[in-house]
Image (cartoon, rainbow, N blue to C red):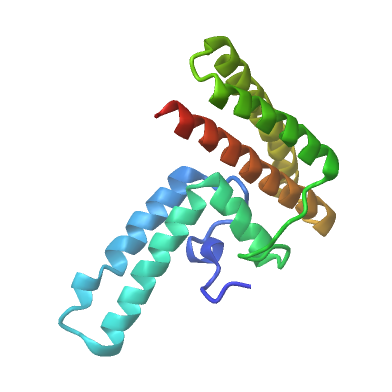
Length: 179
């Protein structure tokens, strides 16, 4: 569980993998005005400390609820299904696919001027990310529509870790291409 109050409760919105971004932004600005530390500078002491704590909490909530991956991790952690330092074991079939993809990336790194190979690598990574997005959207929308069981959340957790793996490969390609 979180040591901080629930971000969804703080913003007075339902827990969702797809929080209404206009409402999140409006609530962020509302709480920013309400708890801005400058408003409590004269009061000092406990009032100022509380305002600073709430301003920090508001910033964390906004940063979390405006990032789909952070929102996904936040809900999974809040439900006790994920920890910060978790070493999640991805399925062997996925890891085999990623091994093949990593080999292709290595080939690209060995022949960086081969535009065809680079396009092939980028296209495969994007295809995996698109497939991931389709599956994640289906699962998270089911949760948002009331299917809040642990079995569904565990599938969402698997999606979360698959995306992290795919993004590391994409980052590897982008970093290499930027050289």
